[in-house]
Length: 423
Image 1: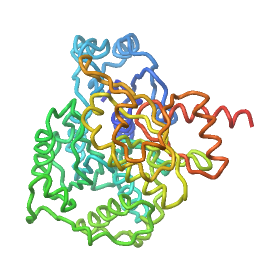
Image 2: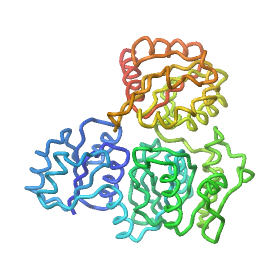
Image 3: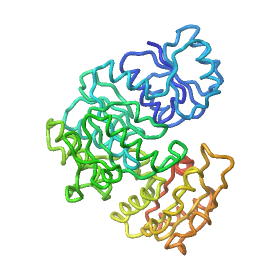
Image 4: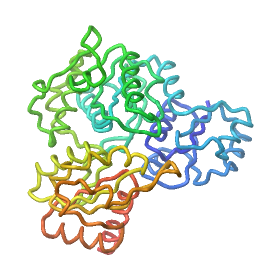
């Protein structure tokens, strides 16, 4: 089968392209910018066009008729490639339909990891431990990994481990054999206009799963009760795992309980394997001495990651780029004591994406008005002045934590590459 992936550089679509390629399909794709994912896919022999005007798609289709056009949720309905694929009679779908079909066609049991926070790390943990135990696994993780590709298909595997996110109601297109729910806090107002919409979606996801493991706090949030298919954990169930960060230890416990539930033992001790988990990119990722990058952009994630940082450093400087103005209107009241783990905070303008044009754009000053340690805030931009402040803090032994899902990570890597090239 010839499959075209539009938006192939994204963390949702890219891994699926690798999986399809592993399964023997002819895979090509397109995007507008290079990324860690496109570099990973190119290295595996997948052809990618850095243009989406439709010319590459049409030329390829003329020589090798495309059977399936898979596209990212970020693609607008009038996108040139999508409209062209439709006019050419090519079957088109978002990633969820493609993956659900793939899992069914290959008779795999789906292990879905969902939740507002911690999906990527938890998915990475489960994949890592299964690999260390010698258990064949197919998987898709919404990030690049330090220990392998972000997605792969192993024909010897029984299970498919999937980071099953709630954005665009993606997770409602699956009927998992086992689901792990890491946490539930209202998010994605562009998909779920109200908290009730969000809660109902997670309740529906839980009901569609043959088995589910979650924390009691989240079960109560969703008004779910323990039954034969629901394993609800209490805070007292968190073991003393050798992982930094309380949230990582909680997510690690979900992984261990999943292995226990599935009666997976493999070759070794799961807890020992978990203690050596190297992490995933953009989740408290160490970029250089005293410099870390993290994708987190929700107040709960900020507090948890700062707690992790304080476990390994006495002093922390936080550089924070809020994500999506529409989301900021929802979470601004949560910006209170979540920053108290940082001795200094550099607050950037909000990264704008998928916005409501009628909505007022909240300023950094407005967003930070209720922060309890507001005297530690500096308002900044991604410029040389901020970089000099970061470098000064690093030289003084301060851990610099940069958080956000927008442009901050790419800016950091560009700055670091320039320094490394000069040296």
